[in-house]
Length: 377
Image (cartoon, rainbow, N blue to C red):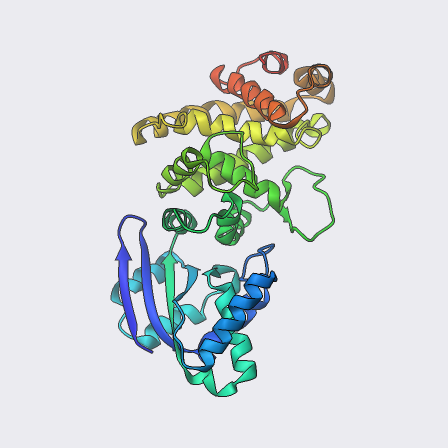
């Protein structure tokens, strides 16, 4: 195997291009491929008539010695592993890094159809497994660096939904989120259970909150193709900062602690859009409005102010008796306002809660009750 390495200084990623036999490649990605690319819930190999015909042509071409375009794999490394890439010398040193990675840290970014074609070609003509192919690895120590690079490089290509692009690199983010907060339980897409306690989320909901936080808007359509270039550019701008994912993790931590402190008055589970509203409000406060980004110094100042006020707010709610907590939350007023105005529907509901939590933040969490928040919209 030959090796060629370049560093992307902007995204702080490495691009490593290798030549590998088909046999070695298929063995390396076997378990990843069986898990549909290594991404839970990722679409499987395309089964349309057109896609099948394209694969059949690839299989036929491979048998005749054709060379396919490089397959692209993404790999999330630890900080120590990432530093070793600076002094990468040969195939053996690179393989030692790869072999230590869990399947959750390696994913097929571009090449599911080609991998299927390779697999089918070898089954039909075992002799071709010794042929060489090119594989490009994107390696990063931070998930948002991988997200940033993928979004930038996919500009102008076959349109994916924004959600689809994020899900490709989301598993490492999810893994890191769960490691940082033991209160979090993310329910898999194919799990029929419902989220019933503070800290429990459906995976789709976490993906949505990540998109909402990065784009700083409650108006996210998970199935929309990336035609809204403004939203995409806002998200790219957010993920370009190394501290972005840490800020997201911190926001989710505050969300869970707030929800947990509410006890029987937990309106989040009854009003799922309140999650979106809370995350959007914090994103706007700390990062600025879309198109009007805060400077690094201003972001740090905003975060410091937020932390100084949200911490005692959560502790105050935790200290309340059940009766006092009920009086403070004003759940009946919330129910009345949302049911009468129809604000429980779609984006209106999200906007309702975004505005409510903006009041809470603007008032430095020093409100006599949540009524002032619920009545602001």
